[in-house]
Image (cartoon, rainbow, N blue to C red; front, side, top):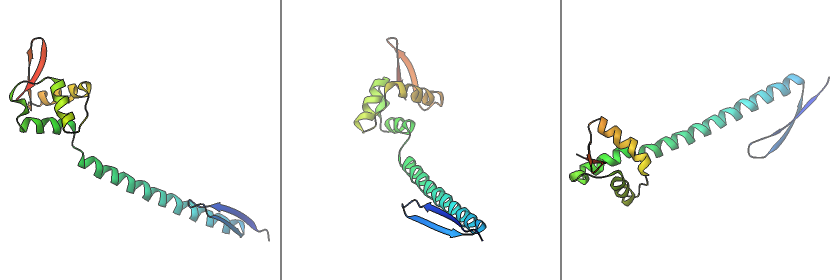
Length: 125
C-alpha cells in the first residue's frame, strides 16, 4: 500500500508532517484548511467589530457642527474657516473643503441657515 506524506505549516509557524493513505491525507488537509479558514474568519470578524465600536465612539462631522450650534457658536454668522477653526480647537481636523459639503447638507436639512455677506456664504442658526 502506498503511503502519502504531507507537510503543513500552521499560522504559528509550526511544521507538521503527516503520513497515511491518499484519502487520510486528503481528509486531514481538508480539516486543517477548514479550521484555518474559520479561525481566520473569526479573527477578521473580531477586528471588524472592534472597528465598528471605534466608529460609534467617533462623532460624525455633522454632529460636531450641530454641537457647535447647540453651544451658541452660530449666534453670529460664521464662515467655513471659522467652523473649521472651532472644530480644530476641539481636536477635530476638518479642512474647509470637507466641511463645505457637510455644512451644505445641514442647510438643506434646515439645521443651519446661510446667507451671503460681502459675496461669501455665512452660516448661522
